[in-house]
Length: 612
Ligand code: GBH
Image (cartoon, rainbow, N blue to C red; front, side):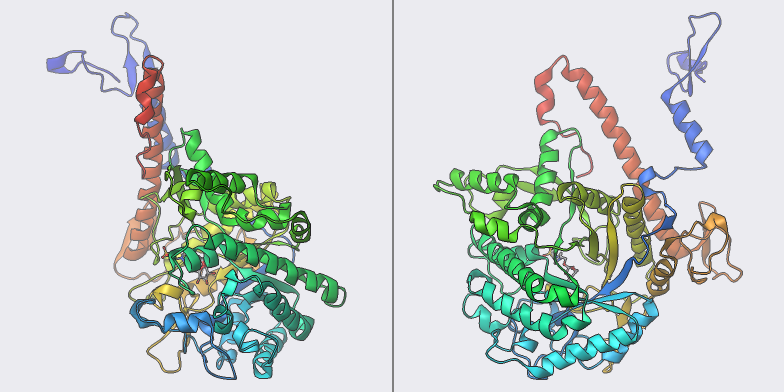
């Protein structure tokens, strides 16, 4: 409590309690710090925010538990079995495009190592496997002029092997490897591609459909449009028309998706009874400054431009009002007389609207957003009018763009539920990478899956989001596009210096398979659970293991290896910083609000947010 401070008398109060020295009864009043300290003692440290606390419970019955790959990233065999060339073959063979000159020529050689991949899937105990078909393996020049039977046979054999292993397929028609022959006539920019894609889809439905219940037309159209046609860091590598190309390309992709869905609906649904949809990707966005309405609006734009671009026409009909307004305003600002965003005719709007059987979502991380006026600049980025940042306290991964932000997935799922009419949602990708030295004890991936999947459970149990499936990206370390083999997303390590490209499970395999076997997270407080693999537990173990490595340290009462402790320490430190930043922002916020009531002008340029 405040007391006599020798030299300074009663001038400074060091106490957790304030004492009124003018009052003869010396009443004690707890200060804010007393409450704070009380809570620290009560929790014996800093308690987790509700958001971060584990929720125990199970997912829906018959939940889809899957792991994913994509043809160009794993197959190799780039000139085997009659396959034609794809835009990625050309892109990786063009010097300067891919880190360390890596290519997918051999990749994981999955074309020739089907057994190994099936064995890996069995070890994870997934109920489903998501893979993609290489279009030029089926149609070498992209058209139905010549159908490559060897290509069809390869996928038929893969489907049979999966089904024999009791693993159901989830098949993506297009995961970015367009036949080069179609690119030569304009690729996604040329609207004749809509017909080409429809014919390709028809052939797959006819030949593979009897063995497939789950189809995905496109993987991440946003990435095709932006990385392929604005930044040029993905094939086909265009960056010369960032004002129009992404919109033209996306317009054709949306129509091509709708045509493929209609082919299925008209010709195959009755006999095959499967589900066809599209997979869109999105980061979740939070306002950089939670006290600014315009930062909330910016965050909203981010998500609308990511998945709304495609989901709005397909789930709600037409581009969203926000998207139309943003592109129009920026077009006018640049002196144009009409919007650069193409329009759908009323018939097209009708034909596209409703072409889904579920919502496919790829998600990795969250960002912070704030608005920026780009002036007259004619560019996709200017249309969106937003700058993105990451909170420095978010845990990092092997990819610079991927910071661990589990809370964002739940918020995104809730957003989709409300925005797109509560559709069934399948998370078709979610995962994390490492780079640098190989460590099969991938604690960060276990942490990632535990926290992210737990947020999915919260969305399902607490927010009533209709999530029907989850897919871990990726089954194998594979060709991570522009960064080659340097960033590894696999549950399995692929040894690239072994000519056999052997697959070795990382520690996350048994962890993920426990979640699958339990169909969620059993409450450790209710005893041991048979479904939970004994070599892993849902939460950090509180009881010391019998044999301990020598350099164990005590961390918040847990015995951990030095490495685990470091991870834990970083995590705790991150939480602490978040808590502190929150408190500081609140404090400054309060201070400013008080001040601004006198000098309202002053607050305008003041950034409250310390995080960015
Ligand atoms: C998914 O893309 C893909 O579907 C999958 O094939 C891929 O392997 C996986 O995620 C992991 O990336 O370095 O700043 O240019 C997710 C979208 C595309 C986001 C590549 C990051 C590189 C950003 N990702 N992108 S940057």
